[in-house]
Length: 501
Image (cartoon, rainbow, N blue to C red; front, side):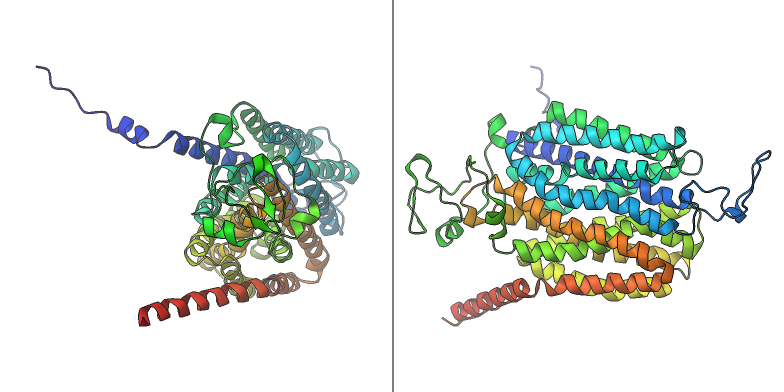
């Protein structure tokens, strides 16, 4: 009798996961790729800056070129003037101000339109405008207005990304290990920045237009991928929905939205016994003011404003800072700046793990922000002494700066968007995410703008501005940190009381 062979190890591994688990993993991977592409297409401008304005006295002159100005002959007009840093600030803020304004509107559209169509359109449109910026090199365009207009349009269409991907992930994952899962998932921000830096750096010295065109084509491709494969909600493929809250939370919390589906009613703020624990999708979308009333939304939004100010100043100005202070060329400075994002990946995962273990999202953010302030001072003081110090300080600063930013924009936004007071109205998630990230984007616009204004007075003053922003971010979390610490002390006292009995 022929002996039956055991099931192949690979097949055993595949079948060990449920259908729901495979779908959740697939959605997590897809949305990771989508937002990696969004950030990948934002990064080239920071790499190309040091190519648009260079120290031409150190550049070898091509033979046969009639040079009238020894100092600016190799620069790209109009960035060949003494006010080039201000002009770079105009480009940064054309994108960031449009992004900040559009973000508040984007969440509202994201709740009312199919996410698959909305994301697909946003990525294809973003790819188009990213390519348009790069085509300015081949079309020999030297108009600041052209580049500023492209940045404004790109900023607007890029707002389709964040509320949509967070809403999609929030639809598929419950609250249990959300900090860790989203900490890992949010590394797409840093992975996108790293890939964007490397791709832009590969072309920046030869044909900087390709530094934009290649990322533009990549995000267009992911938009097509989204159209064919994204599944918005578990119900769409007969998967079980996640449980966002415990039964205790549901019983203790008064809903902000009074829904009356299928006879389940709220009477005088109380919930009837028929109210389900599992989250169901309600049809009505939450209002802007309703989202602001969710406990913690305002505090975390204002904290993110200053946290994102610091993060985006590094995103847009770090390569130029390294080039100016450490005297690296454009490609080397771009490659070195990726270490900040590598640190950001570790910082985001660490923040998620700690906040899951302690249950203190605000406390985790506050501690990391407090630690970041002296590290920023040290980086400016000793960060460029040698290569080892530079690498270590960039990794450390990246983790401490991007950790709180990552936690607030992912796990915190998803927690608040599926807050128990909403009584299962999952359509609030996109609006809450848009409010938090939109407020943060105001800081993202202010940071690079202030850096452009302050940097001519010395980079030291830029770092003082960043340290001040870190401290202010901490202050806005004071009430929430106090509430979390008081909760820990209460639980500890109750535990000691039980032991005494």
